[in-house]
Image 1 (cartoon, rainbow, N blue to C red):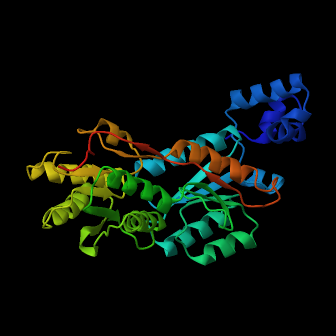
Image 2 (cartoon, helix red, strand yellow; image 1 turned 45 degrees about the vertical axis):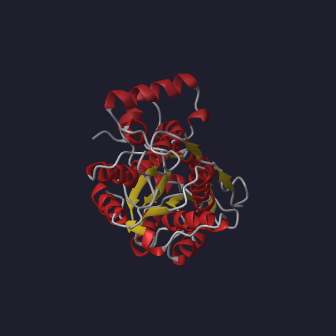
Image 3 (cartoon, one colour; image 1 turned 90 degrees about the vertical axis):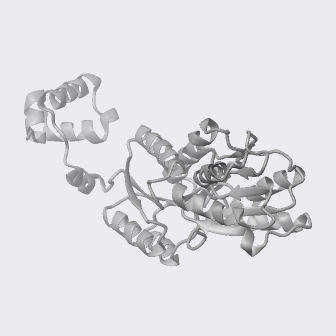
Length: 333
């Protein structure tokens, strides 16, 4: 395996010059830099990250912990986050928490021990020790899929409670009086919890009530969503509209309703949240909230990279979702 000394000999220069080309290329004359870069290519030289970190006191890595990688909305967020970081010469290290605060804290601690220069997390449900650890190391943190100026760290996203109220009010404006909801599991998931509360807020403000028996919590899977919808369809009278915590649950709700001989949306209206590609291309196409996951990822990277330049002051970026009305919602018969 080629060493920095091999590169220096091939380029007929010193190891110090090779080091400057690798770490501070602007300080090296163009012709000399070109010779070193040519030697690096010819020898397939790869600098040892650990050694460079010791020399520069930087790892040029950012850590991210998401609840799961088995969710397209997080995949879109991570793709944009990594793309933006790569443009600034940063590497993304990824871990998942499985919606468990204790596991998230353990993963954050492991990333910190590996020298990451910042952390991206999702939502607000977590062990307070996570923030204590990051403050102790003076590491910037950004929360995705949520936005709150009162948070002690950077955030970029939206207010799930307020935005789910928009969905419920849309259905009430269509004259739906009997609303139901298939929510995500609300324990240790602030997004699922806030969306449920937002739907209840809107109903109460409009003189309606979403009864506890009209609320089902389900894992974000087709199987769990169908079971939840089946439970709601046994209700007498049957709900005229069902709000779902995300598009996966909405697709499951449509499938279950169709399997029971119902017509969508003639017999029952259904909404989702996130606007995954599946929602637009499913039949019937699903009314949902389009969230700007790509912009959230890019802004999250920016907030991490500029945190210290901004004096360490947390910044909140609100990216309001768009209500996309498609073919699963009409006024009730």
